[in-house]
Image 1 (tube, one colour):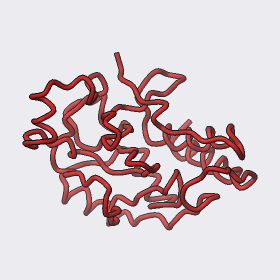
Image 2 (cartoon, rainbow, N blue to C red; image 1 turned 90 degrees about the horizontal axis):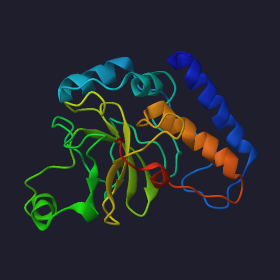
Image 3 (cartoon, one colour; image 1 turned 45 degrees about the vertical axis):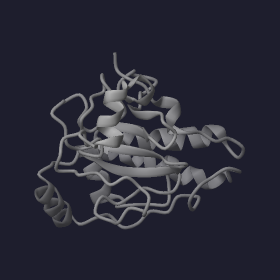
Length: 210
């Protein structure tokens, strides 16, 4: 199945979300989608930051929607303004972790912890774009600048507010790190599965590739 076919399948699932009214939901529901972003705008964005956006994500934001009211508090636009308290990544710098070596705050030595949070010797907010905020300081991020080919284009769970860490989201079917369309389709499938009374967090998929 090519990217466009898969996007069509996912967006049909999104339309089916109008049949439910979840008791616990963030943002406007059912999802509403903004206009796609112009190809020239994304080309300028990539050139300015020295990156190439992952193919599936790039295709979605230039042909379907540049942003939207879901998942959770909504899909961020890569060229829009993030919220006041959201992490702000330096996209021109490399993301410092890989799918095999994520950030587990509980495993850090005192020296490692200080390097990140006290002296800021290591910039952990680098090489990614924000996808969405699901509340309580928990975000989904997309890795767009890394030297590790297995990490490029994968979606991670970012939760430093609760001292958890930054972990790739693991696809339950393939045991590989999720990519953008995996992430988006999981939201539609999981929301439809849970119906009116359920709630989920992407954190349920956070882990590491062995």
